Image (cartoon, rainbow, N blue to C red; front, top):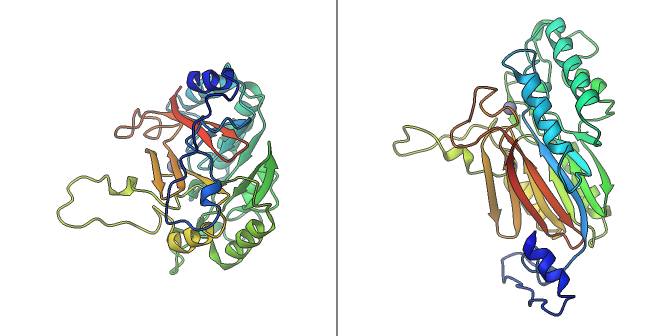
Length: 313
Ligand SMILES: [Zn+2]
């Protein structure tokens, strides 16, 4: 921040040459701004990315989540938007309705009492109700959470501060219908393709998903001998297809996810993937490996550049 304001105060005299990396990404590559803060682009908006809150009545979760919301709401430089990346409630997969209702009641209460910033939500794997015995219910599956959040659909887009946000629905039943995997499915993929086509190439795009599209956190495992096993529920299974699509649209700048409860910044050529830990840390039992409970704080600029950090609240 200091560096940015210093450069700004020099009135552009000190503008450094843009470092256009000769990456593999075709077209518009050269148009990218130099390293964040150097291009002199105007600030667009500040977002807080919270994920994996896993809210429930015990484990001191309500008190800690309230602390987190206060922390975000009291940032000196105002946060314009909160993105909640899913696993909003502790777990509703095979829970009974009373338990599910109690968790959601707590969400609404805390958001009302402790938060004054607009919030947009993505659904996580724990925000889906899929106990076989309840299949006949109208709110079965994702519908329950969609109703709670007044969302017509689990994937959607919106524009704010000159950035386009695309919220993905990354949790779907596996091929054998017994568990979930990370993917978009044909219909949503088509939608994403159309949305990107319809977006002005000068408008920077941020992608929000619960399950990471690409992550190396899944490799941080104990007792590996000579191979790692990555499950389809840990990371998107359609990674290559999605990345190939994003490469047709150089205005896709940043992909946010959670799910793993580990903090990671991964740069794949010119695409940045942030896996922003978890508000709940290790499901409200301290740190998860090296990652403390926290949230992502991201400043977006009009030229598609950004500054970001992971904040322990
Ligand atoms: Zn989670």
